[in-house]
Amino acid sequence: MFEGDASTVAAAPAQRCSYTGYMSNQPQNTPPPNPSRPDAEAAVNAETGLPTSAPQAGWPQPVDTGPLQVSYRILVNAPASELYPILANPHRHHEVDGSATVQYAKTGPSQLSVGDQFSVAMKMLGLPYTMKLVVTAADENELVEWKHPGGHRWRWRFEDQGDGSTVVTETFDYSWTRHVVARGYELTRRPQDNANSIRASLTRLAGQYL
Figure 1 (cartoon, rainbow, N blue to C red):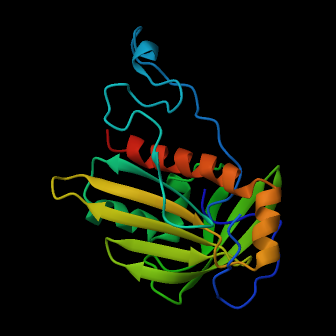
Figure 2 (figure 1 turned 120 degrees about the vertical axis):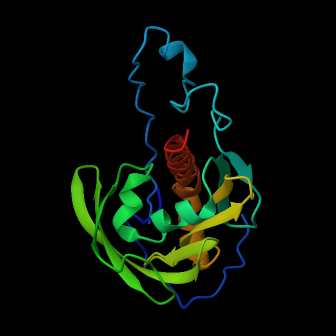
């Protein structure tokens, strides 16, 4: 989803890479529905696990946010003021993690501000590890972003629609990494894997407000 992964390459100073070619890179399969009535299974989207009647029953839509960035967005039936506190609180990240790697926050404040550091207990392929991250942007009810040790960043943007709903966009931004790191990410299909995790995370968030 959005914290990071264990195979990290040391980051260069924060500057954007010109190469154009914390919540992690392992996609999570959508769990099967738990129907409460005989016809419930037929009313569930097989890809997302959401009711087919929900406006966000399809996968989140891709967004072009620039080179070396992977972004998807989804409409959530809740105001930004209700959604932002979930992602601005590292102790709640596991609630929407779509990668099945985020366990719990070990350190960090309950609301992130620029410059804050927090650490998260992770688990991948059965192996536990700790990821330390730094907040690089925080604009209440609009944007929160943190930096992975490898240099890439995870960003959540909230666009309140004024009708009780919010367009939420999650981005894996590796334009901040060194050229060799960006190339390594692409050779190991990190962008594609993270795209799956982003879709799963957004779907999981939207599913809480049906």
